[in-house]
Length: 92
Image (cartoon, rainbow, N blue to C red; front, top):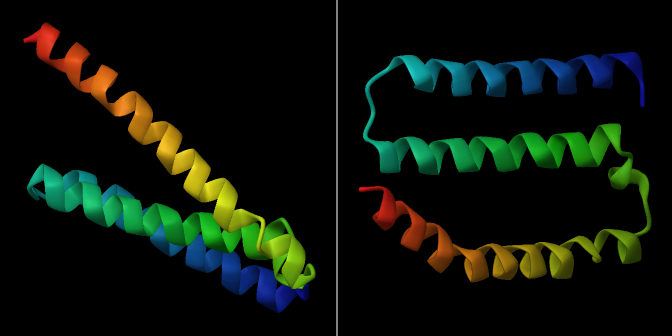
């Protein structure tokens, strides 16, 4: 990775972080903020994994492992969601 490309990626990450901070200061509905933050965070994670973890230069077979791992992780999170909702209801 060249210095110019690293600087461009770093500036992109800085801009996405600025968007996240800016969202904290404006008054947006929580659901809208959550959706925007998730999209921005996914973009940041993709940039970091692609360039700084060098996945962009790996063979496609290694890159395809990310999809099943991500699906498994999402299913595990959904498995814990009922517990989190129950605890949230108990706190009220």
